[in-house]
Length: 148
Image 1 (spheres, rainbow, N blue to C red):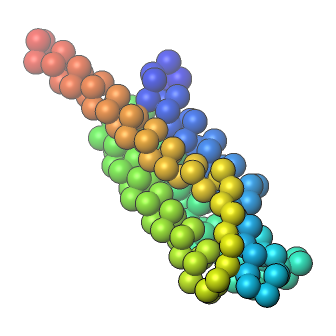
Image 2 (cartoon, rainbow, N blue to C red; image 1 turned 90 degrees about the vertical axis):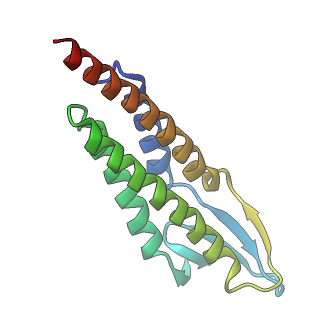
């Protein structure tokens, strides 16, 4: 299982998605000078949640479960590919939610994005590489079945 390069790609993507639970996504300074922190809880000002982020937390949890499930489905390659395609689509949605949460309620705000915002994009790239590796394995297995 771990000797396959696509498993390593999925494991790295799962670790990056798991780190989203602990790292802040952005710092937002509005026109009035208030400083907000955007993290897994939502948009927070002085430990008071102003915008609830439960949808983002649920989406990150679902993406993490898809990655962990795909890692352990190494004998069912087609289902593994489907899990990763769904994960790619959800990561695109997560990236859109990051943008929505930071820009929809602040007009003239200075937004400082953190490195964690890039993690879904890196996970999309790693998922794509894993899908390519799984496809190569599937093609190899099918060619060996033809020889018999």
